[in-house]
Image (cartoon, rainbow, N blue to C red; front, side, top):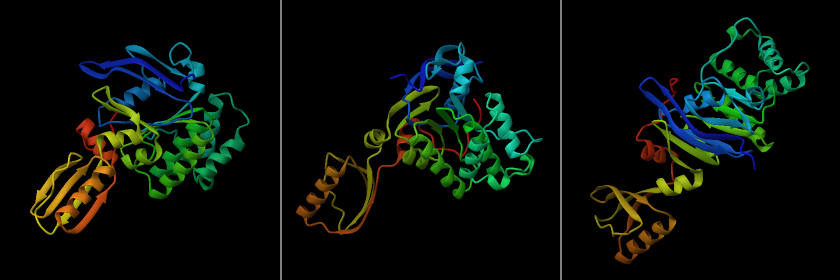
Length: 307
């Protein structure tokens, strides 16, 4: 099967900064894919190369088989990008903006699809409003609408919910999930790791221009996170167990990392054998933020500057 996005040994340098150091990655058609990393990891640079806004120093990128350099017209038609920055034309209304965007792709009678996008993004009431009069959240909705106006099979979302209220975020994801179920390939960058955990079937994590992890979300959580257990016992007696790592201990209170549920069952069994009573018990499931911190050594931030 031809990849929706094929990235082959892509490198990019800005002066002394190696923004991308030979990235290779295939994204499958219909996949909901997450591209994560700390500030300066190279995510926005990679998206700029995919979108044709920057030229790689080495390597190649293809969208559904179309090279973004040598076959750029077809590559642009196959791709919709929601940029991180709020870029808009202050002289047009929302509907005019979307009509002009349609015209860039040769679509003259696109109002039915524009109306559907406006409805799903809760923009119908703002269709005649000048872009300058919109709030930041509303402008971001229009950016999403612009990326979808030509019905591209591949959609890249670069921090689409940054600074957006909860209601819009939920409505946006409902619409994007619907597009994904209809066969659209979705690539998401976000610092809201719970979004990536809930939405993405597979994730690549970047650090300093390199991929440090690439796997299904489930496997990443299983391999790098594990469950965290907080216990208060009736005595300071915790049995050793190969599936248990002690993260913190303070008298009868323990914070543990468990390899899996089998390790939990083994620990509880040994506590019962020793006659140790559990006074408090709090189990937290695997967490993508812990995976992110372990692999990148950075806490997620609210936004990423362009690199």
